[in-house]
Image 1 (cartoon, one colour):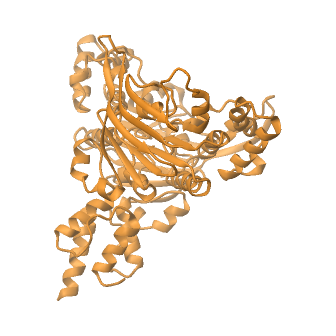
Image 2 (cartoon, each protein chain N blue to C red):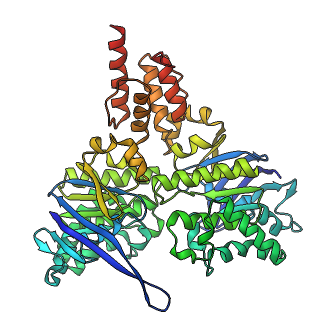
Image 3 (cartoon, each protein chain N blue to C red):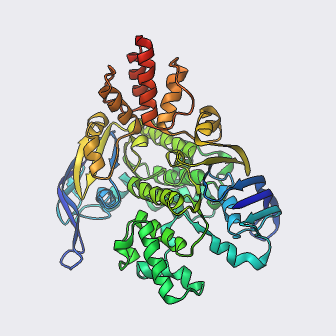
Length: 283
Length: 286
């Protein structure tokens, strides 16, 4: 179930005075089961990019291949693509609409044309998967807290049994505990269901702790595509394009500069803590 | 500047038929005193009552019990309503909900125009407000073509143009990217230090709080902690209980301390942490 982007270009409003290139020569391979962070500041092309991954947009030139098939091909079954590549938009709770949470989660699988029994089974599994309490199943989604609403919205996508789950800023507007809960949930979905996860985020601190690969977008191009340690080693370049490395990276850089025997490449709290303790001979 | 005495706010929950289901106490006995010129931060998890509290500061909501006094005026007294709203300006989370003008300068001029300020002075105020938030170059732009952070700064300029004594910002950066967030916070700090405007910042981002004069932490409608950022962030475990966090650097220092390094509590910036670690190393070497 891999996704391959080959020399993808996308131009908004082509052939008008407003023409604007949102993606320029993007080449990416997304194999099964990876946990990927997609980072870039506003207007860097990351939203346009994820819209290509489930066929909401098709490239102006170049190709996107899903399981070896070109999604621009007129015979290509986009419905299948969209059921396999699930997209959770920013503030997904704004898209809840049913009278109760359970019905809302049923909506996706129902549209796949599955039998009623299967639909309900999937909805039940999905709600359990996101850690949603039974007692709220038949409550109106509008009476829930922000974090709970977001869980229901994510369950709605999980119930489609996607192979790839893309989440656009899933923690926006949540309090710190809510952020941690949602990120922990996403990690669990990745680990337990073995699905590919693409996490779109502004927050390096969030991303560094969870993902195994980071793709950085800048002005429509892929600026970096590597494991977190290698991406954050470019912290100066990241700053130039309006991003930053996690706070601990800076601490480690400065300690290394001050002559501490630490590995300046640490990007997570755990790594930094262990490096510093080691330098003080406490570990 | 703003004082609350035993402020209580309750609202009645109703079901679909309009029958009363229960009463929720969103703000519970809050006593606050904000001095002129202070930079105040209010923290609290989703649903802790911070926004409800903030809406009392410019008379969008009225107390069920107790009092809110803004610059000597009681918000329950209808007579002062417009004076209070002019003196205490409010910025909300979503910039798209606050911009009404077709052109940036028109949007910023809307407030003073409604106050009946003479035309010449409106333009002066638009100029100075846009300059204060660093958006003067965009005065002729359409707000549709601005980024979220730029729009939010235009909203702030719109409030400044009304010459308020106090600005209340309710999660102004929640929908912004790191650059937009930095610019908005920088604008807020500049208003406070340069113009002397009282700022009340409500946020979920712990990093934005470290420059505040005073921090209030809310939980279940009450103020559960108050103090300087250093005092507040010294209590890592308590904040976690309240569904909050601390800045990443503070957390790292806290973890190191737990593992035996003699670091002080409440380290806020990475410079402080590096300096402290150097100090410990020097002591160990001598």
